[in-house]
Image (tube, rainbow, N blue to C red):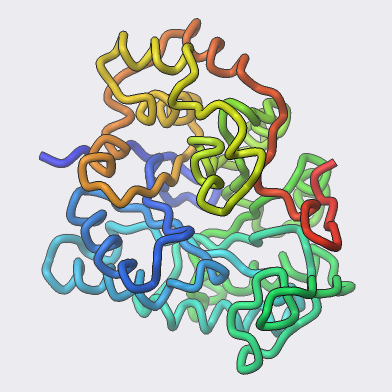
Length: 330
C-alpha cells in the first residue's frame, strides 16, 4: 500500500499534507504524466505557481486521476502562487482567476504571494510568463511598482471562499520568501491571517529565527529546495556547482546508513520531524516513493542537531544576483 503523508492543521482550519510533489522545473511536456503518476503513488499535495508555466498540464494530470477514480478533488491539496507583476488588486484578481481556470479543478487550496516584490504590470497577452524580465529575450529586469503588500493581501483575502463570500475560489492564503518583520507587519492588519510561509530551507540555510517566529504565530512553514544545491546545479548556479552536495555530507550519510534510508529521505525527515512541509520533485518513480515515505522513521535529537549545525547561511534562490539586484534578503 502507498505511503500516506501526515497532515498539518492550518490557521484556516484545513489540513495540509506534510509531503507534496513540487512542479517547479517540471517540463510542460511531461508535467501532466508526472502529476498523474505522483497522485497514483499516493501524493495528495501538489505545489505549483503561475511562474512555473505548467499549471494547465498539472491540471490535466489531476483531472485524469480524478476521472479514473484514483482520488476525489477534496482529497487533494493544490498550491499556487501570485507572481510579482500582479500585486495590484485588479491584476491579482485577474491572475488568480486565470490560474484557477488553468488548473481546471474548481478551486485552489492555497494561494501564496510568491515574493514580497511588486513589479510593473505586463499585460497577459504581451508576455504570459514574464518571470523577472520585461522582455521576451529576458535581458531587462522589470522595474518595481509602488504597490504595498497590504493591497495585495487584501486582494487575496477577497478571493477566499467564506460564508460571506461563497464565490471565492481559494481556501487558504499565505506568503513565500517573506522575512520576520514583513510577517509581523502583515499580522498587524490581516483580517485573514496567513496559513503558510514558504521559504528556502535546507541544512546550509536553516533560518531558525524565521521558522520559530512563523510557527509561534500559527503559520505553517513549507521548505523548498530541501536538497540544497541539488535543485540549482541544472540552473548553472556557480555556488551550487562548487559546494559539497548534501547527499555526501557525513552527518547525513551516517544517519541514512543507521536508519536504512536514503540521504534524501533523511533530509526530508529533518524537515517533517520539525513540522516543516516539504515539496520535493523527482523523475524517478523509486525516489518519488521514497520521498513520500520520509515520515516512517524518526531521527534522534542528536542527529537533528548535527544536520542543523551544517548551517552556513547559504542561499541559492536570491533575486539580488540579477543584473539589477532586488535585495529582499538582508
